[in-house]
Image (cartoon, rainbow, N blue to C red; front, side):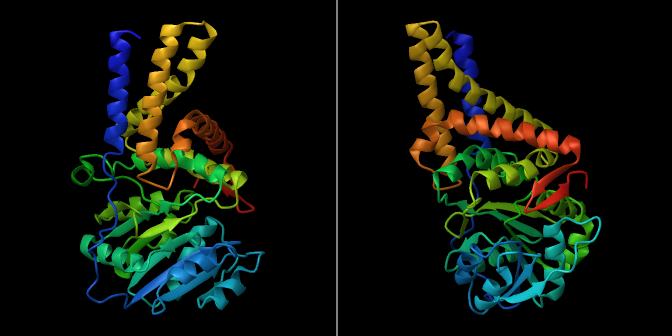
Length: 364
């Protein structure tokens, strides 16, 4: 490896450190003076009977919880009612709407609180997690978005590590200049806002056709000169991202990847791509050196592989409970990421993707 090659590797390692330097998390000291009075939790749910009990058990008893049953086939409504939630049966999906956005719109209309928390069914809160998030929103204003700490439940779910890293890096929220420069996008699993701000940006009706509803809603807030804060879940809120396995994970990321890139700053996209080329190089270098039986090149490639794997682990551990073995097989998750990204681009060009048993338009 030449001196120029070494410099190029170091530059891209530095880019990785920059992109995920410090993930901002929900402040442990944050407490709202009024507690959770006037807070409504809206849960859009389609075939979430397995996930809902974990969420409902993690919510405080004194919070209004509204589960919007989006035409489920697995008893979601019954599970929600047994868990103490108020169930709203979704009306038929109108033209020009994405299912989740339509469910959120109906849930917000049925809610009575002045503070709205839109929460995915696979989310789980710590004992004081929701209160801390509500307090963060009261302090920061606008929209507070939290990407829950990822708790993989099966080996397949661990393959989401690179997806998580790239997704959070693309927001600019974790760079040293994150708060000063401002972040982009948002994460849909947890969104907290005041009702007045939500009404001001036009509710979900304003973004009803967008396939990446979280990014579109964040754009609506920024367009209305309202702040958007992106946080990592830390010890306040977690989730199992795709508990149904490989197919669900591929479909979910296919739906989000290509469209989500539109919300990323161009310079940040360049940085992420540059870092990804380092992962590809580190994965390919040992194979190439072994094929030509170059012992010196093989030793250099092994060092590069270990260093890059170490950085992947350092980054992944900021966002989820990923083990060292996940970093050790980073070429597998990197290859999966690239394959799913290509699949997402193709689906976007074709005009639709499959999600939760529906064909979803990518052109909203």
